[in-house]
Amino acid sequence: MTSDALHGIDPVPISALNQFAYCPRRCYLIHVEQSFAENIHTLRGTAEHERADTSGHEHRGGGRLERALPVFSNALGLSGRCDVVEFWEDGTVYPVEYKHGKRRKWMNDDVQLVAQMLCLAEMLGKPVERGAIYHTLSRRRREVQLTDALKQTLHETLKALRLTLDLASAPPPTPHVERCDQCSLQDICQPSVFALDSPLGPQCATLFDDLADQDRAARPK
Image 1: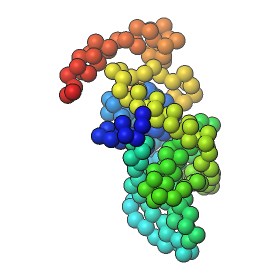
Image 2: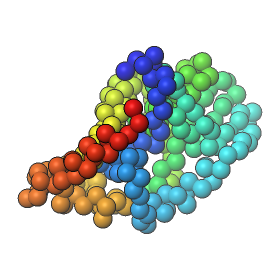
Image 3: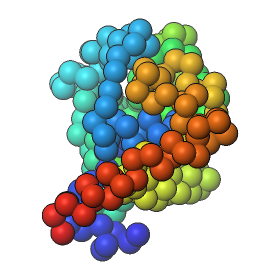
Image 4: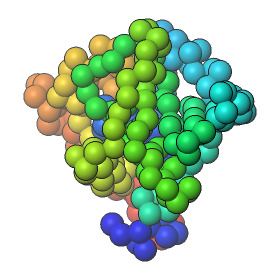
């Protein structure tokens, strides 16, 4: 989808990119069905984000630090906010995303940070080529370089996300079952029931199709 085609379309939240890259079904349940539940992991994450989520700025060593900075991209059709953006004395712009726990092997946090970099670059009219993810458990930053491969991953993820958000019903649970262990939506998602390889999976996949079609037909054109 071109930037011209995105005019007049509601921007996608950057946070939805992270959710989608982790699990498309979780993303759909949260952003389309407005379903959410807390567990110990989400509560810890919220507590650890509390300072970064408070808007404000401070000066450090000749530079400036902005917290909870709103960002957007008209070209990509994205909006959201950065936990922290550092504006260094040499002109470098450096976003920092705070994450609960330690680094994990999947790419959802990196995709989110890349989206923030591209939003900042469009807003400021200058390249933003590096950022970091701060892992609260280790209290260390992991730097992420903006590469062509990561930009391609972002574009592919965003395209798939838009298609998923327009579905009449939620996609099946992720095949990466290890991601379900700490998910707060297990009781809502019921991955063991709705998985396509479960005994009832194929029937469950179409269980609510008629109701979803009726809902879609009733939406304003």
